[in-house]
Image (cartoon, rainbow, N blue to C red; front, top):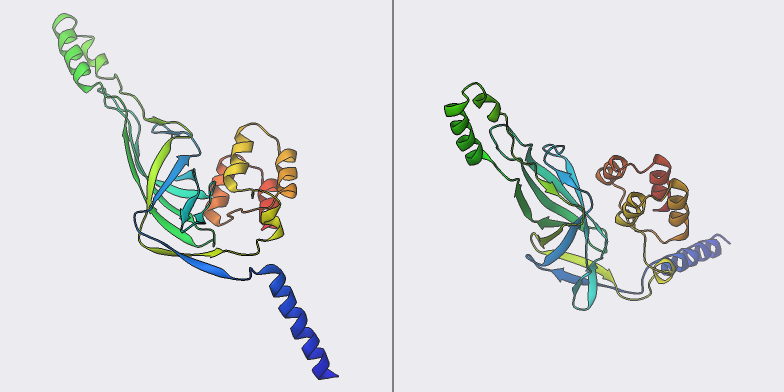
Length: 245
């Protein structure tokens, strides 16, 4: 009797695994330097951005190797502000230096990226110096006020496209056969999708309904939750994302 129960349990376990795991999987080599096009998911300004602030991007198009998708369109991408400085007096412009650091493959394993964006605002240093000199000749008392003139801050609009590249060789495990029912039913909902809906003005109830009705491919690590919270996504929506994983 005990032997029969063990056999029954083992058979049930095998069947449950077969119901959720693809029949077979393949490895795809993602070489160093592979291009990954990403877009900025928020506006950046040197006036408000600070060093080490996280920057949110999303993959623009599928990355395909040997006919298989290894990085999906819409996958969140992490970046960080390395150096930011707002506009200053004497016509000096603002500046901002940020990087694209990491995304994930279809197997949810981190993929290192490299891309560096160095942005500078419009500077008025020369014009300020000339103007101050001229004013000093004709109106000496007013000359110091021209030294207070500032340059322009850097504004990087939401949606800006950036060409990033895979940093180092990676191996991605892709499911080739027997996609899950969730994948077959339609495109998966990502962090980038929810952020787009939220920024378009859709309320909490709509976002919750969308999460409930859609197959999910959320990234819910601590960094991702911070990005969502800073963007104004409610804790109820974030909790629903966690529950959907």
